[in-house]
Image (cartoon, rainbow, N blue to C red):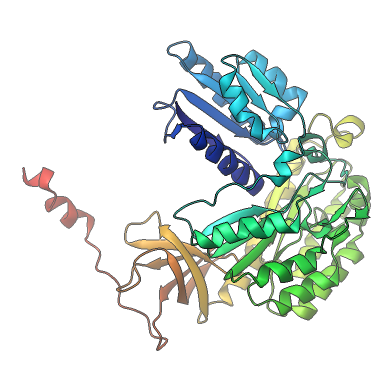
Length: 459
């Protein structure tokens, strides 16, 4: 079997894709790079917003046309598969395999069924499963929990991924050891709400550390960099910030979604904290981490949001001074309380407010990034950038960074980089040596010269 996977959505979906790919390989499947090469195509879906759902709908339509022309098994997994909306889509587009987020280990049974297979249960063995480490990569994701016990009125995740289940610390550390043995240098701990790790159903699990203590444990493993996502402000404790400050491997980067700067809107969202409580968390973080890089999520145009509410979001952005933000227009999702009980705002109004927020975000990102110019940053370079002769990567603060290839440092790895220029969304620099001076760049052929020296051109 030749299998091809397509992934939409969050980092948790990327982790789940790797988990399923490792299962497919263990069953003898070959992973291929395109639909044209595959006889099994599996789509890992997202249901948080309407746009990724529309992308899946369009892709399944294309795959149905291909199935009419040649043998092809089509599968759908992930959050959308768990919803009636996705199941109706699966029937319409003749999907053969449907796996919810809790049934990923059923992929073997699905392939053996030789027919339609639907697995939508939340199975406990998934939480104990340790996938092999990705090979040839310096970064890896590590799931520490699944599901969520919060019920924000706009969010479909508790339905698609079920209640919160924390993985045992022993399993987490065993998986981390495998990643380190494979050469991983940066690990991102994943969960719908990492701050609530070890407190499932409102009760502390016996023998489980707090999230702050888990950070300390992971930091003693020898890993060079630790990041985590996502944090819910409701469960944030100052001990997390203290643990970050005490643990050199933990990056000074915090992604703390606020969603709105208005306490009134936050109540309608059922976020369980106020504007002032959120600002209190930010103050605690900055007390322990004066140079912290702060990112957030913001939903624009939530039902009932007034211009005054939106102005509070803009003023909160100024008060915190976020380095970056993921900003979204509110997308009503069937099955959520806000979809059922609240009237949506006009799209034109939501779009106009989003544009104003983007302007605010660019102002602050430009200012924050400009502050990095002239400094030396530790950059994890992943490989080639889009422009020939350049490498791309990111700093400990998650800033995307581009550097020219340099003599003695022309591949992936961790390098000191002197930042020489910045934009609101990118840092540009040069790799420096032990003396702090930029390493000489590897000469780049001009496109015309490269074309003239091509054997094909000479022939």
